[in-house]
Length: 123
Image (cartoon, rainbow, N blue to C red; front, side, top):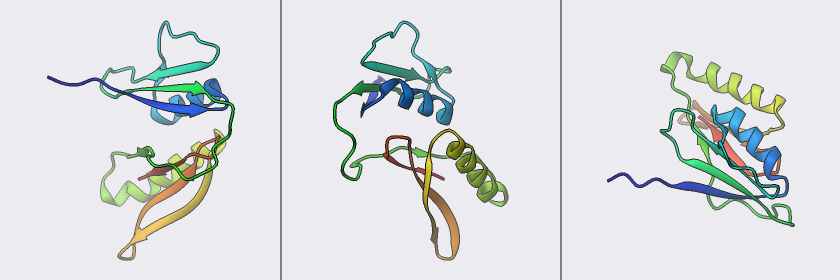
């Protein structure tokens, strides 16, 4: 039996954050979910988990204990180019690049912040 689950997230502006993550992940707004203090996005193919965003009064103040990694399907020769292109497109959507990571002299991933300062990686 497969267990379906939802990632729940706090947000000062849940609709803005949901729109950002929908674009970042190729998700769509959850049909029928219409709440002023919340938003939900789903994988249009039904494979990934739903992600819900609920309004909270306070901004993020500490490092995430969990975060999303956007993993791009790519051949090793194309991987770095695709990661950099995705990071650039996310900056145009309101994300911020924090740093690039390498392991053993090989480019690995880019650490970023979403529009509300939540850390995530593009790998």
